[in-house]
Image (tube, rainbow, N blue to C red; front, top):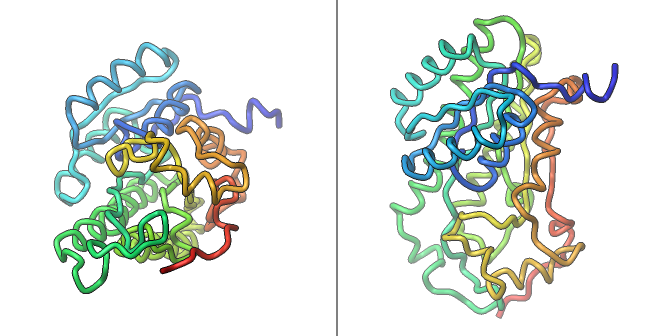
Length: 278
């Protein structure tokens, strides 16, 4: 099998949640650029419309459509999956990517205590939102993906956006984010075990710091990303486009024997020494 054949996704039906910005957009772009038919789900209609229009110009091989979807609304999400399956003659690949930022941690990037992020003052509504979007809505997305793929009986690939936060504790990242991503990574392994008999592969991409719009575009600010640059083995944070090769690998037959994996892409940041705490 040639490299071109192994990485071929032309004609595949793909759904990407949280696809108007950042990593979700990067996933959608590489799929469309390689000839897949891609449906972008996002809650931000204006940005979604712009992204779809731009992608149609850049990726003429694949069919690109968008749907305004709140991934926390089970009925709306289910209907959107049904619509995409009808329009694209099934669903082959799903990127369960939609997520929200963690909010402030109990430490500042300089290692000082941050009262706003401490457990005894943490806003309960924020906890509910982070868990709801970053874990429960991904469960809903993966559940619908599995349902459609099993009915089609042609296998498939489910790829969740987890985080290196699944593997360690971090004082500058908001507390709710850590268990949300740890739970998601464990869910990926559980579903890989369950769905393997149907040739449905389930994997997680676990990014470190990327320059995206999450956390209000915090990583685009040089001062805000200095801590992450300092901790990275490569001395920098990543651009969203750098996620594309890994996304293509997991969506294509190049990873035909890969399931239940946690693919870390973080410039070695996970290897950093423990933070000093005042």
